[in-house]
Image 1: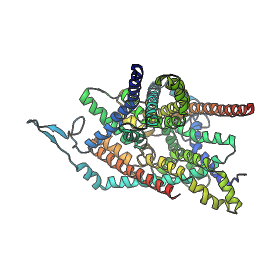
Image 2: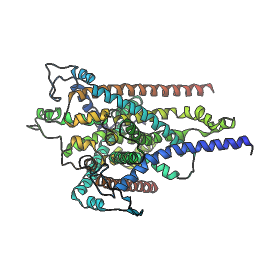
Image 3: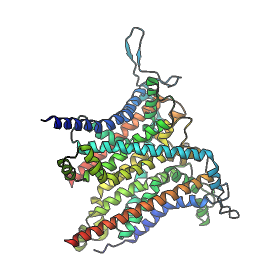
Image 4: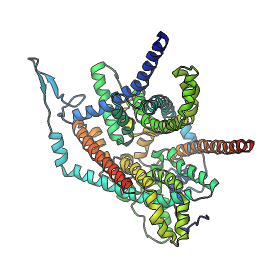
Length: 282
Length: 304
């Protein structure tokens, strides 16, 4: 059937994408603007890269970016490990004591407002500090724990969805041939859920890298992440070096997404091709 | 049972215990216990100390456990007009923003799902891309765009629609705009997957029987993509109610939203018990909404 394309839908597509992308484009354009008044275009001296130079000369920004990268990488790894275990428990162990509470605990962090998550974790860290002496001060470690906790929920959803589609007869065959459960997991199950593990890691990384509200509650004086630095600058008004920072981040993300998209499409095409060859061989 | 299989059984039980126990323990310690602490502190008094709360459990000198629970934080929170206004306003802002994202997002998702093959993937990635770029920076972009000397005012003046710059920033309008802008991808993605799954032969049959496309849309497409609508609305509404960043950056001092009030009680007033009581009330309100939505969804599935 030929799908009729209504002009209304086309117009909404154009308007919608313009709405999504014009603000991002405006940041890119203004990052090359010489004027310190961000929104006034200084045609005489633009385009310029002074804000990029200023950004890379700013040790505070570089240190915050390094801290954010470190926290995001560690949190994403932790969230994926715990998330894979939780997803495995939920999919493979149909009954165990406290399973329904476990199911609730793995999804609830997603719908809990960030101010509540942040507040509750801070109160926990304060109480733990009083009872056990740890943590003495809040910083990178408490931020990482908080990020693992809220990324964990997303990791579980992604990995669980994939794990449910895995054909159990493959695992059973390996078991019948005498493989130990741990070996079955590493040799059979893990490769099958690897794409989901990779997407869960990327998703967790982005969520952690981007977080401002929860981080503000559980961070300490010595640790400022990049979003915290940006937030404190932005609250004082627009600042041209933030435009430069935004442009760099948008550029990096676009390259990553385009690469991932390309790889995805190529594997899709190859799979289709393989399937056709297999059919032809019959 | 041979000793070898017994040993294997033992090991697999041990493995199972670890697989369940490690994430379970983590979530109990870092998710459930913290919420219980919030609950506990919401029943205590504020004092000038660090932490600025009075313990509810104390040992008096003759070793009797004393429990002092007071509900004053709750009566204070529920009795105060300001907090009530913040709750009502948060729900209103979230509801209107959700409706607007649905009205913009549905046609977009529809257009993407019906686009020719290669385009579909590209458009899908283009919707997902803003989600991967910093949320904070995308909200920040609007500060520049909406400022008095910014491009939006410039364009409107150039077109002759207004004579002098309009104050967009620090208004409710800017908050709505920021919400719709930030949460639009969360609406489009579930709608897209629902519309894409739709069986096209149904529409074909309707057309063969002489049904007009508009009528077919409301009679077939819309009801069959209900699940996507529910999912999208939930994904936008829930975080929007507790949103802090958007009202803090784009809203004015009188834009009362509950996320911002909790933040200010905690950081500015250092009143931990009141902040905790507010958080508990917010948690209850949101749980109520989630349960209600699940019930509505279950009923509509049954009716089908």
